[in-house]
Length: 597
Image 1 (cartoon, helix red, strand yellow):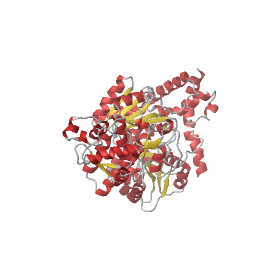
Image 2: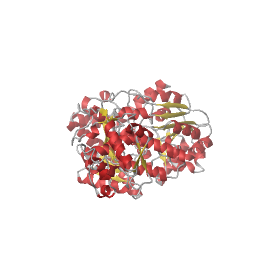
Image 3: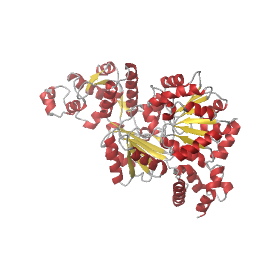
Image 4: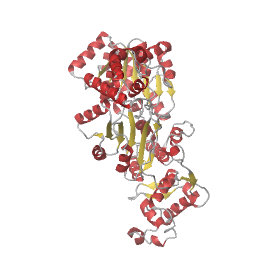
């Protein structure tokens, strides 16, 4: 059946070959096995249930977490000539009637279902009557309490699957560690599924992280050369999203705020604008993004530290899903880390889950302060080995590590001699020799450590504290008002000269302002800019007329190839990536006319 799937891949979707991992998953799916697949964002998970739905018989039901995403996926599929529909609370009465009629007639191949529909007692009976053959669950980590984005409504999935009887079940997610995978399998499957764990590398993403040094200015600088590009900027607070969106709009960006405190209509309008238009920057809390499948997101920035490496990976994974170069930037500060630690300690989770969350936060901080290739550190967390990528901020900056044992001993000595009762700023004052009121009131200006670090500026000492924290030499007392540092066993070994430590030299040097860390030459370099702009305008006009996202007409990659190759006939156009038979018939002559000028 794989040969038949390859034929459909080309004739319907316009793709010449499977992406890495797709064939390995499709084999068991087409053989009728239950499957749990962990595939990186941008790997084409959706094709692993869409293709079998077209090759086989019966109805495939897809559980998807976002109504707006569901609507756009259905629009993209129907625009490709596939019989697909959605059943959710966003349907108007006429649309609901049409979907129900199609279910009764057995004409649908794919039905997208919202999670809230799962709890309805009539859902299982409705799907059985419609001839359901396969249940596909997107964002399957939501079913697990060990997952980074647990959704209570997903708990009904296991009961629904059992009520449906012997129905093939497929579960897909981009991020699930071993504990989460085990929990997903336990909740969704009665017997052992085929488990596929794909590689986590996204080589088209440039990874970059910076200590906070005026976050608004840093974000504005990062976006300065990106006007007209689609992107996401994540903030930890609702107020932060609105303030930063306003600052970006003032700087000339089409920036919109999104958070759970906005009215439902405002959120829907902002999400629609982002999904359907070109060049929109969404400034959002993590309330935005689950399931977002916009292929041409060119950057993702974090104005505040993400929750965990899994959350970071999931969020940056929304960039570059079309395979073209995209960039990421994450800002972090000790304030972020302390807040996150307080949230963990004051939360209601069991102690075992808190322990895991602490480990995940420590792993994220280690990624921020990594002395080597950023991608190596990220992939190592997911159990993968890799060579230096040459394409992250650390590789591009020619970062070097140095023996930082003496600097670490000075910082540890300041902590020790002040009774392990003070936070970073007080200790930095002691090290650089600043006799602040707090220092003199406690007589700390008379300590042997006072002024021993005067050869380095304050920012460099702050960086050293971050690095020795990431290395496990010190721990923070969260019960302290000022985040007092305590020395760990590893720290004692360094302080006593029994162990050494390497530090990163780049964070100890003044950063060059305005340095261009953009990806290598973009893949649209061969396309004529004026011609590409004309085709984007035509795409926007067609999408607006049909009420569908612009990428549902053609994604950027297709337009770039059209502008570079300039096919002169429908037959030549058929060879372009992303142009299947239905789209060739619908749009081919219009774009040939645009290419002819």
